[in-house]
Length: 233
Image 1: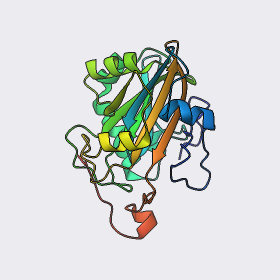
Image 2: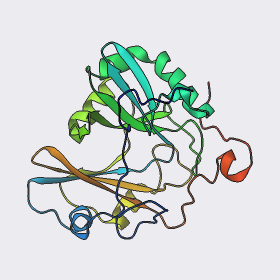
Image 3: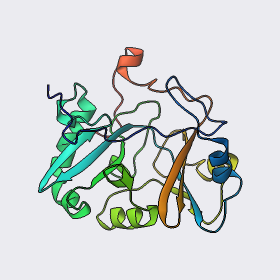
Image 4: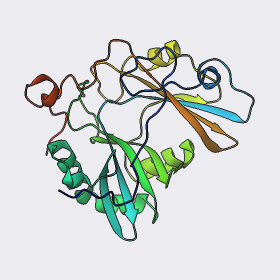
């Protein structure tokens, strides 16, 4: 197994929870002021608050280093080195779609998203391909949401369903009502993600997870059963 992280850092970090969100061990909350910006009122017109449906899969990414593409797991290791079939399938899928990824990414960029091939705690009747991209990053910096969304969709990839277009804050209640029926085919939506930008640049993120959500309940390593596949070649 390859143990080095080819980029030298994690593919993606953790997002803080809103106060009413269900938290697990090791999770953290955002500051109450940040929660208020997300769900009650923006600071001023320089803030934009985007809200998207939260997806329940495996966090993965694709990095472009020169003319090479690296399929990565969340921790930053190569996906093909994982012991889990779902990550090896992701590496295969990236190779199979390499031309599209080369069009999407400039040298030094990576896209990060949710790999929905295997059911974790949610079953998806996918109406689209199994990779949904929510960020394009350069190092630890994120590109603005609207430019990310336009570029991702122009290259034929999927982005999470947008629930709030940035003009105002959005309450948890309104967000969950807006995604009551998942456009990604979820049997039950697990929550939503808030993304705050200021002066056209990324500021911070927060998330809400419903109280009865059980992480990984459908994974064989958690329940001793068989894997459930939302997509498999």
